[in-house]
Image (cartoon, rainbow, N blue to C red; front, top):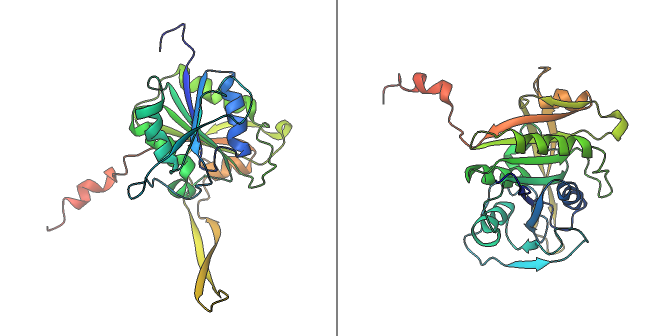
Length: 260
């Protein structure tokens, strides 16, 4: 990025291009850089790193809100990862300086990062060598206050642009459900060890066919004070560095001792 250039920021999400969370994030990013928006045309929560391979993709130019980016928005029929791939290969004038995904409606802390379309979009940018951040607010309400953490979100973004992250590194940022005056600050931490204890409610449709509705309870198994769950409970934004290399490096030497 040339010094006189504004940073080019790609904004995406998984809740859809009209979701309040992404509209708030766009406004925040307009104060920092030149914003392009390529986001799903409908909700894509829980899609993880899915891509579209068995059907066509459509990407339609949109104008939703007034703003500097209003002529640089596209709604994509695919997944969050599709949005990032299309943005990089077909839409953006150059490689973005940063990709921000969110603000997600609901937490993506701990094990939730695995399933999250929000975080998978950020990870896809990381795979492409683009610094990326996923933002999530621990509030599922449509009317959630996405601007309460504005100063912290912008601080994280500006620091990410200023300090070049290693290639493939992505930040997973979660924001507690608190008013602005009660947010304590930012904590860098690790992902808590937690699971979802899941079940499927079995029901019958009007034609007598059995269907299932997934339910679940989140269980935090980690008592550590250095985790994202702990930071959120204490009123801090949690920042966890993540990467797409899923190799269990610590187990390689043990595995080499097996009698293959």
